[in-house]
Image 1 (cartoon, rainbow, N blue to C red):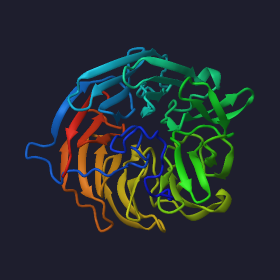
Image 2 (image 1 turned 30 degrees about the vertical axis):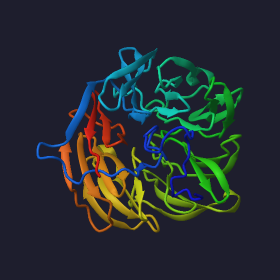
Image 3 (image 1 turned 180 degrees about the horizontal axis):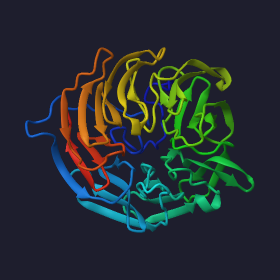
Length: 410
């Protein structure tokens, strides 16, 4: 495959099955899976396979090789914990001390989903600590304190970047400095945590980078505090850069770069920033396809793409959001419906929506209208972490529980 729009955000090692959900936003980091889901829930509501108590945090689960891994906080420690995906039996637990405190009194747990690759699990804490453990046992392999070593700033809400693994490198937005030079994006060797390369002069945002293959070649696409940047995945050298920044400093840029067709990708933000689609040409030249405000201004979430259309949440989370369908070709709004903020998965053309109020909704991904086929409550507390879908089970968490719900179709 040659296009970014296909399953070519190949950020994981070949040993990880595409049936797994081994990182933030799934196997290709685009919120898409080839799995099908049921059209309706049983009369009694969504069927729970298992449920377990967990600590605080906004990090979603990752699933690979029959294990579901969660990054959460208990007391003064961040915890990487693994359970059997099939029945919820605990397999291992690794705790690392943390002193992180949220300046606004919000959740003080991890924000970023761990990544499973090459027999290891890598997680990036809100406190700036990068942690690597063995996937089979949870044994600690290495840690790096990026807050201390790279002077990575805390920002408004701590670090939230989901680690991107490309071959033997772990790539994160650090936003600090290394040996006197800017270290906006940094790569570390998966085997021992040593520095592989340092790139970008921009501060970190709350976005997670993605690996893309364009006609011009392969690039890590990063949505930084100041804009969009394309980096060489081997050296960290900047291939292209363009400013794309909210008008005010007190803002959040969190959307992950999303493929929307041949050599094109989408990004969006609130605070007057709006949405934009770029096309990557020869020599990684960036060309604007369209740019609009009030079409799909994404606050914390990342939309999904299906058959030429984007489906995602528009507007500020605290002001109320709308779920929308927007044409990826020109940004035209096809439909809009009021819905609590949430996250989406594209499961073979079905929108799997989890609202922050814990409601699970299924609806066909069509530009004609929003017609839910199933709705049911699966979580009781605020659910802002992205779920994972693997082997017919949806794994979702709030600040108290991790739940596995049967959603598999034929």
